[in-house]
Image: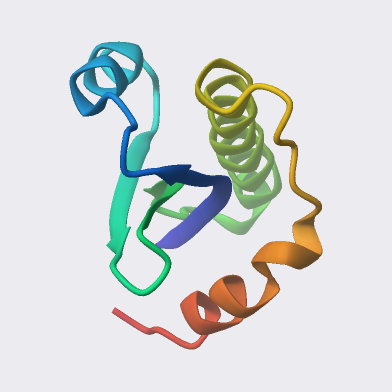
Amino acid sequence: MLRCLSPIGEASWELDLDGLGRAVLRMPAQVVVERDDRKQMWTLRTEDECLLAAPEHDRARVAWLVRRVTLVADELEAKLLPGQDEPLDSFRLQLDNEADRAD
């Protein structure tokens, strides 16, 4: 199994969670919303996974998964956090922590 995640960004407590639910209802990836009490913010990301099969198909499946997850993240970032396009480095610690998890 291969898991892919893509950060969307951080949103204030005032984020309309019902609106977020409506926005992601038909999107082809999971959206994770984590409460960060320390910063008083919501941390948002998309993620999904796929099973790898025969090695001759793995490259296409990985490309499909990465494209799908990152496109959803970009679309939600533009919709929910306009003008707040964060550089990838601002998520480095979070991504490093996720990379260490083996579920």
